[in-house]
Length: 264
Image 1 (spheres, helix red, strand yellow):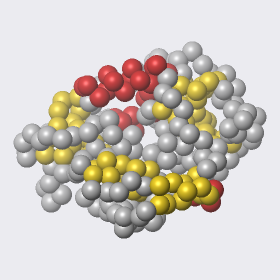
Image 2: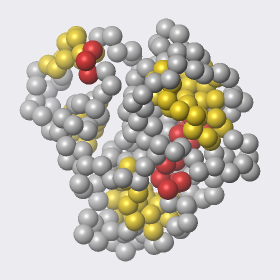
Image 3: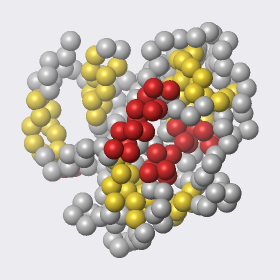
């Protein structure tokens, strides 16, 4: 698709962040959610279906975003599909190119030229976006960590709390107050890497309360090019590892050595 892969030469070593916090172990709730979604592909999951760039199975592009974003953006259509690096597509039919295999519906890179297809379901509960607020690792603005997951996961995991926040690579935090470190800028609430040391903060709404959802979520399609828009993480694609660099809020902290295993 339009998003280009970052495929640098095979290095012996790259610089990695020595002060970047290690990803915390996922909570039991996070693990259970991932297991359920991995088995079924998510709520309303229909299956894995082929796509073609020149003749889209689902014709309406809604940009890039997580599962919840795509579900919201495709309200009014019968189906939505997700592919490649979080691309979102909507339509009223989906199977013109037949079924496919190899969809990785729970991965950041779902797969190219194939959609994880879902039925558009009514939302049970939504949330009001409050804004972008600063955080500190040693003194959390939202003190309860719930693991890593998409918007819907965090909304559900923080049930019973007044607010929830999402940051970094899909980290989820809950609490009953926010703002102790003041407002922040640069939150990318619709990206896989939302930004470090800052939360996109939301207030869950009571069932039946209407909301348009997070206002910062856009429907603009973005094109990823090497060094400008790729997530700084390893990703298994087509049976081999490729490294994504750049687009990190913490690139200026890269200090320690990290040995990269030889690539096949």
